[in-house]
Image (cartoon, rainbow, N blue to C red; front, side, top):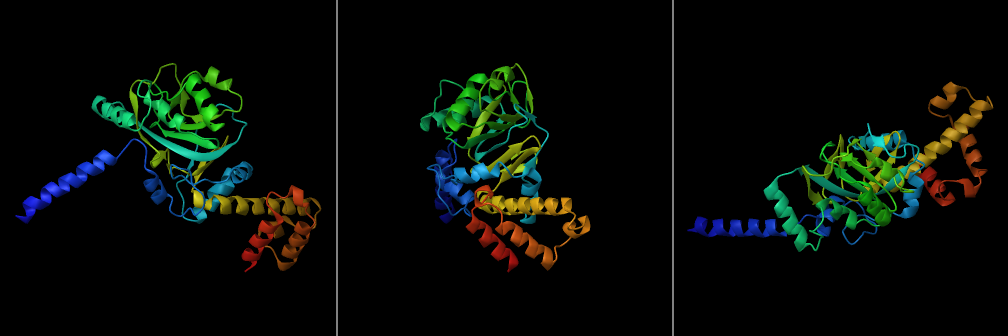
Length: 311
C-alpha cells in the first residue's frame, strides 16, 4: 500500500520541478553556484564585482592570473586559440552565460514555450534572449560547441545590440557572421572560433546563466573574464579582488627588480631567487617613495597586503 502512495508523490514532485525549470537559471541557483561571493549581487543573483576592479583587471597579465588560480586549485579556467575582432584590445567584464546545442525540433519548441512564460520575445530568434538581459559591464559568453557553419550566433545587428546593452563584447565557442559589420562597432570586441556567411539554423539556445564549458574552461555566471590577444581566463568572482591585488604587487616587484638590474645594484641571480632581508628592505624603501597617484592600488591596500605577506 505504501508503495502505491509513494510513487504518485514522487511523480508529482518531479513534474513540479520540471515545470519550474526555465530557460534562465533562478537567482537562488546562481547564488548556490557562487556561494563564496560575499558582496553585492544583481537581481538575477550574479555577483556584482565592482567596475573599479574590472578596470584594474585590464592591466593584469594572463600568465599572472593563470598562476594565481592554479595556486588555489582552479586549473581549468583558461582557453586560447581564438579569432579576435580587435586583437590589440583588452576586455574584462562580468559573465552572462548561454548554452547552445544542435537543433532538435521538439526540444526547440519546449524552449520557445518556456521562453514565452518568462516574457521573452518569441517572434525573433532565441539567440537574442541572452543579449536582452545584458547590463553595462557584462560579457556575453556562449558555449556553441565550436560550430561555425549554420551556427553563427550573431551578425552585425545583434553585435550592435550586445554593445548597446553591455558597452562590452562577447566570447563565443562558435561562429559569427558579418565580421565586416562587427568591426565598425566602436568600443566593441569579440573572441570567436571562426566566421561564416551562413545564419543560425541548425543550432538552438537551451539555457541562460547556467554552468558552461568553453574549450577546456569551466565557466559560471558571474565569473570575471579577462580577455586579450593571449587568450581568455575566467576568474571566480570571490577570487577576483585578491587576484588583482596579488598581480599588481608582482608587477611592482618586477618594476623594482628591472630598475635595480639596470642600475647593476643586484645580479640576476639575486633577483630571480628568494630575496634576502636586505633586498626586501630596499624594496620597501622603493615603495615608500612611489607616488600614491601612480600606484595601481590604494596605499592602504598595499600596506595591508605586505603586512599579511610578512606574517
